[in-house]
Amino acid sequence: MILAILQARMTSPRLPGKAMAPLRGEPMIWRQVERIRQARCLTRLIVATSGEAVDDPLASFLVSRGQTVFRGASENLSRRFMRCVEAAGPVRHVVRIKGDSPFVDPGLIDETVRLALASRADYVSNRVQRSFPLGLEVEVVTAEALIRTATEADEATAAGTSPLAQIRARPDRYPQAHVLARRDVSALDWRVKTSADMAFARGVYDALYPADPGFGLEDVLSILQGRHDLAEWAAA
Image (cartoon, rainbow, N blue to C red; front, top):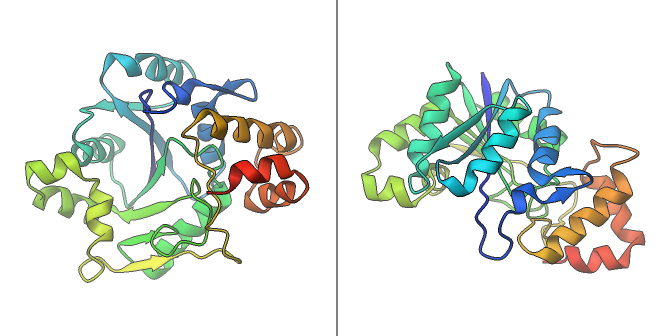
């Protein structure tokens, strides 16, 4: 099984509640779910959030739409990841997507998963050797590496650090492979962290979503060439 975990929360220092902010008539979190579900290599998707009351509206909305949600301790990332894996059943690889990424590209997810299967690397991503815009990060890790890391980490490390960060930091122990874009566009930042970022996302969705809900990286780059207002927002 290839399990995707989308991490999302309602708390944000600069844009609280952004996961439920409207984006082309639906909450941003749902637009992400829609896009991730278009990836052909995934078996299952779980949205991981905290058990805190502030995340109740997010979890309730997703469950009402039939989306599987896992709620766990907000301070222990390793434990939350492992509980998702345990709940999903036999898992071969875990795909991690962050909740501030409304432009997550299903084609890029498939490309990263395919490289993970072909290379047999423990960790595959487009994050270590950056060539894609921020906000299009895809990380694929073997369940075996994830379990080993979570088991060996002490409680302080497990609580404060993502298990994938621990794996990224040990290429000597966990073989890695990297997905590169056809051209380097790593100077762009498409994450949603501020109200200006949300305005950018809404502008792009308004321009592209009606004709093609599954628009990808090249579509966004193309629209930016003719929309200088959007291009200014996209620069990191």
